Image (cartoon, rainbow, N blue to C red; front, side, top):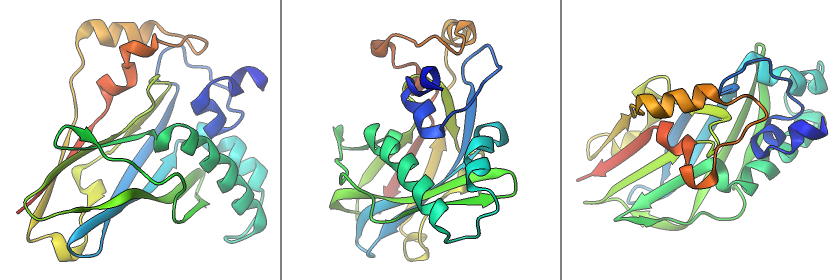
Length: 212
């Protein structure tokens, strides 16, 4: 258990045992909804659904707990603490500059969806950002590519109804080089790529928000 916990993302996912030989070892399906007050963007409401193998130990700990039971609050707090340690695994950009986040989410929780664990939280921007005439980009990824974090479909990123006529969303999925793909495949679960390589970032989807 201690070996697994050396990996930041493995701490987030809690005592997972992997048998795969290549990166990534785990998968998280992302869904995001923009949080606004109509004229400004204040945050991202995220839903992270973990694959069944990744979810197994979290759901085992939860047992037959019902929604709202104390064990879900405890698990959510433990997982969220490690997500915060990695800056929400998210980068948000405006005009070539990183947009800062608040140190704590405004809300968060954990639940069960069949055999999968689901983490939900609101990632708050440190300062609300104007929307009119602006373009933003953001990505959510594990820098080591130990975990694949991705949107299955473009509609998994949603605008509030109030912005659907004035803003548009696009999800770009990169195509890493064959050399990068081969390197990822060569890594086993004990390996970590060099930090300056930013392996996970090379596989990360980029979401673009553009408003009139």
